[in-house]
Each structure stands twice: as C-alpha cells, then as structure tokens.
Length: 204
Image (cartoon, rainbow, N blue to C red; front, side, top):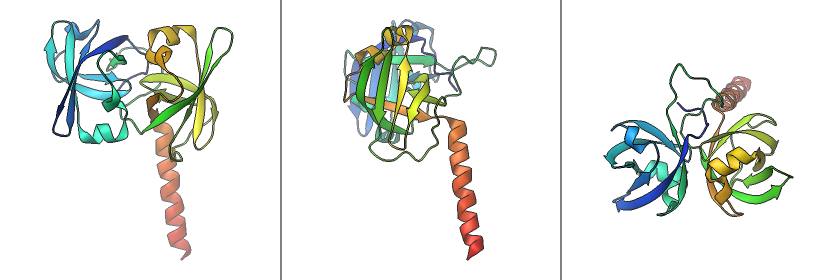
C-alpha cells in the first residue's frame, strides 16, 4: 500500500528483455536502503526488488503488468517516480494507492496558470471506474485531486513542488502515463454493477 506522495526520482540505467518479462535497473537515492523482495512503486506500478547493486536496484515487470501499464515504454535515461510502501505509523498525506495500475492514459494538453499547471489526460476507451470532481486519482504514482472529469478524460492541477520533484516536468502532449483509480470508487462501481445485474435478473 502506498500514499501517492513521491519520495524521490530514479533514473533508468538498464533495461533487459527476457522472454515476455522486462528487467529494469534504477539508480536512486534510496536504492541502498532497499532489500530483496521489498515492494516499491515505480510510476505508480508496484514492483518487487529482485536484485541490488551500489546505488541501484532491479525490478521485473511481467507480461500482465506490461499489458496494463506504460512501464515497458521506459528507456535508459528516463526519470521514474519512486515511493516505498507506507508504514502503518505514518501520516496518509495522499490517499490509499495499491500500486495496481488500471490503464494507460495520454496527456492531451498542458496549461500554465501563473505558477501552477493544468494537465489534461484522455483514455483510449471509456473508463469503467467512478471519477468525481475533487476526488482522488493516481497518475504515475502521484496522488492528485481531480479538477474536471468525464467518462473519457480528466484534468489535474499541479503545484510547483510536484512539478519539480516528479517526472511531470518531463510530460508533453502525447506522453503516456499509468492511471490508478481510487479504490473506494472501484468498489462502489463494482457494487453498483452487481446490484444492477441482480435487479435485472429478478425482473425476468
């Protein structure tokens, strides 16, 4: 479980394909503190540390992860948002983030707003999950508040600190990002879908 508050930026220093899996080597300020089997969020994707080196760690993304996220598009030199799993004793400054990406979205527009930025994103297909204005969403591992929403797109406002300390400052229109919808909204959506199905069967 994560909070969506990014700890540090890592740099991809190695990428290796093995069958349908991809191994990524990441250099970061906290890599030396990690342990094998530890879970770390990489651009919002929960991945397990499988190897360690001086100042760097290695994770493996399997086919299922590659199919639903943009993690496989990372190249050597790219920056990646990193967060270690939350401790039970720490403050939840963001929202509950599982590190289980729901789908990929594309950046469609970036607007400057006198010291902050509005980022607009669009889905390739209609989102099945619940999004509400001022609700929560996780973009590349960053816990954010929704500004405007529809079934196919949404926008978020980014403050200077987040812009500078995450890979948001590298985004351009067309950039692919990993999206995780609010887990509470996902449960609400699933319960509503199930209730509607039961009501239809009862009416037959």
